[in-house]
Length: 280
Ligand SMILES: C[S@@+](CC[C@H](N)C(=O)[O-])C[C@H]1O[C@@H](n2cnc3c(N)ncnc32)[C@H](O)[C@@H]1O
Image 1: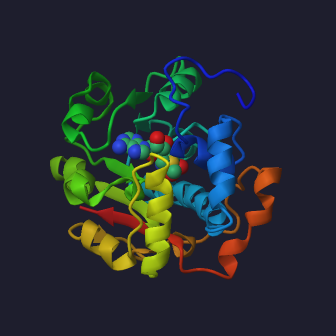
Image 2: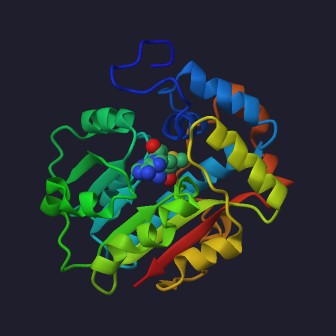
């Protein structure tokens, strides 16, 4: 889509998190406004390219853990993003072929691409919804069709905690589905954190100024947000340290225009994607 006209009803007058994130993973579904925003701010936050990619590698390890070790067979993936390689349903099915997945995203471009990918797949669906509206997600006919709340479910909030502002009551949002779920259900959460108030404020100003709701948090703030369910080993960490596996399937290469930023997080580990897997 890089140089094509976008499908109708897909907002392209503001940069979109789904498209920028997809670009860092090697995706092609992005527009000039996304690339312009990313290239303007990446010199200030070059770690973001590594962070996005590490998040996607964590997704694989977390879903593998959930299917192989925790016995989870049903997933709700909030803010799922554009389909790429090793999407949740594909990872889950590679370990458990009866896994069912409801993808949720607020961005209509995700719905359009998700539907194309999932055509004919009766046990995975994508719905266009706001993760802050737990009721709408639970009441959606597709959720009701695929998720059995008498069995454990995993609710994934991967690299989307920073899209929840304090005014959104993020604790209510993040725990909303889990509160409804049976013991043995899991919450998986990651978001961008920094211990440096100036960097947090700088990143928040850049994203919010471009129309993307954004709240970088400290690790302590995330710990408080997630308090309740028990973190599984190794706890809430920089997700690079969550059960690292050098042998896991690699991502597509970093796009050429972003290659200058790759590796930046090695010398600046403060800014990171922080989180883990928790069990009710
Ligand atoms: C950085 S991407 C993360 C993609 C995916 N979760 C992953 O970890 O690979 C963030 C996604 O959250 C979505 N998003 C942002 N705010 C949202 C909201 N309020 N409700 C649902 N999705 C939202 C964006 O459209 C985008 O696709």
